[in-house]
Amino acid sequence: MMNYRLVALDVDGTLLDDNHQLSMATIRTLRDVQQAGLRIVLCTGRSPASAIPLLEQLGIEGVLITHNGASTVQTPGPQVLNAAGFPMKELERLVAYCRANGIHFDANTPLDLFIEKAEKDTLSMYELFLIEPKLAADVLVMDGIVKFTMSGQGEQMDRLEQALLTELALPATFHHTRSGIEFIDVMLAGSSKGAALKQLADSWGIKAEEIIAIGNYYNDLDMIRYAGLGIAMDNSPDEVKQAADEVTLSNNNEGVHAALVKHVLAPLASVGSRQ
Figure (tube, rainbow, N blue to C red):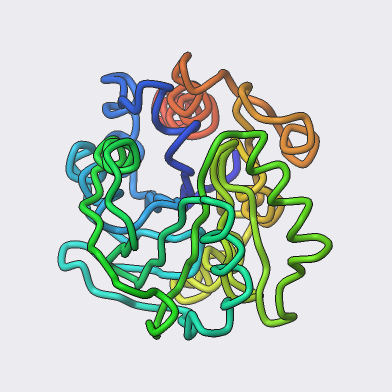
């Protein structure tokens, strides 16, 4: 039996169902896993403000990898442990393109989210993610930004992603990741969930083979590949499933609960019954 010590969990499309809800079975399972001595780390594209309420709902405290790996925070607090910040001026061409084409965007510091326009439909989106955005007159004068996020309908984001590979190619110091059908994130090169997870695990003396990572989208790929056991949700794109060691049930069918019962709780119960 593999002795796992850390469980890294994506949030949207993985831990939560499509209604952004946590099931009671999943809550109980995660509490049991933590009680068994494993560390649970949420690894999300969300900001700390948007992810901490989920930890509270789970009834656990710990470290969060947020902004797709660009910021790691300790709870309670939150205390920023690590952040990869940059001046927005370096993304001037991309911001100009978004403004000219009516693409919504936000700029994130480790703990806060800033927008230039407070429109009703975008505010309701932030409300869904438990975020209260702050207004900025001009994001381009901001420093210490860890993630720049653009959002819109899937087809609009498809076109933007193509542009990022051609006429809108980012400076070599940056990279972009598709964190959902409607979201594209830009961060410093080297910032990712997998890189942040490795740094955190190393600081705790935990090896890759002692980690289970569960995710559902392209921004989870390097985390899934890094972990000793990388698990994709059944609602993942094929490329994510192919990168994983195993596919569990979908996020609407308590896939996280099923995977952790199979790989953590059932083996522990089996050992206990033999003693």
